[in-house]
Amino acid sequence: MSIQKNYSFLPERTFTDQTVVITGGGTGLGLAFSHECLRLGANVVIVGRNQARNAEVAAHLGEQYQAKVLAIEADVRHYEQVETVLQESLVQLGRVDKLINNAAGNFISPTGLLSHRAFDTVVDIVLKGTYNCTLVFGKYWLENRQKADVLNIATTYAHTGSAFVVPSACAKAAVVALTKSLAVEWGKFGIRTNALAPGAFPTKGAWERLFPESVQKLMDFKSRIPLARVGEAAELAAIAAFLLSDFAGFINGEVLTVDGGEWLQGGGQFNFLSTLSAADWKAAQEATRRAKS
Image (cartoon, rainbow, N blue to C red; front, top):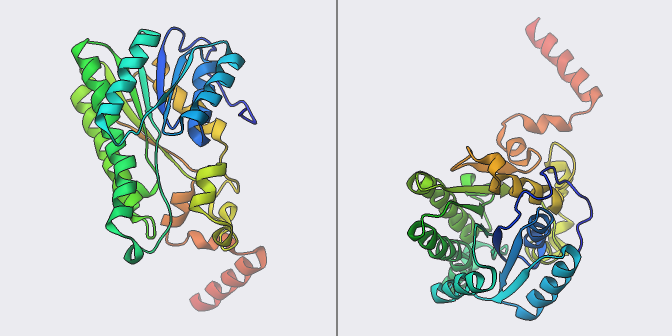
C-alpha cells in the first residue's frame, strides 16, 4: 500500500484540518492520491464499492499517518448513496473541503461488439459518478458559502477521441466540459474546478484489465512517449495535491496533461522520424541534396 517514490514538493501541513473525499481512493491512482493528501495533513474519506478493501486500506493509512481516514461504501452511480457519503463525512469529520472524482471504469473492445449495457456501465461510472459527486458536494458548499476545490480525472483522449475505448472517450470528454463549465459558474463562489489528463500510469488492477498481457506484447509504451518511460502514481499524486492547494489558487478550469508528451508525439505528422538512426538521416540528407541539384 506504500508509494515507491516521494515526489512531494508541498509543505507537509498544507492540508491541515481539511478533509478530502476521494472516490476510488483505496486502489491504483486513487490510493496514491490518498497517500499524498494524508502526508499533507488532511483527513481522507475513501469511497468505493468494496467496503472490505476500503476498510483495510483506511486502517492501514490511518495508522501510518496518524490521521483520520474513513472508509465509506458507496456506488457513485447512485445520487442517494453519494448524499450519504457527504452526511457521514460531515458527522465523522465535521467538514469537507476537497473532492477528487477518481472512480472510473474502462475496457478495450471494438465498439461494434459492445452491448448498450456495457456502454452504459462505463458512462455511468465515469460521467454520472462524477456529476453526482460534484452536485452533491457542490450544492452543500454553495448553500454554506464555503470555498472548496474539485479535481476531476480526465484522459488525454478526451480531446482527440480514441478507437476501442469509445464509451470512456465520450464520458471523459463530458467530464472535461463539466470541469470548464463549473469553473466559470462556481468560480465566483470560491469553488475551483480543475482536471488532470493522465497518460500511461500503470496500476495493477486497472492497467491489467485495460491492457491484458496479449495486448501488452503488441505495444511498447515507452517507445510512444518522448521521455521513454511511463509515469509513476506518486508523480501524479503530487501534481493533484498542488492543483487542490492554495498554491494553485489562481488555476481554475484547467485540464492539465501529464503524459510525458505522448499525445503530442502521436499528433505531429513527422514525429515518426524520431525512429531514424544517424545513418538514416545521413542518407536522407544526401537524397535531399541530390534532389536539389
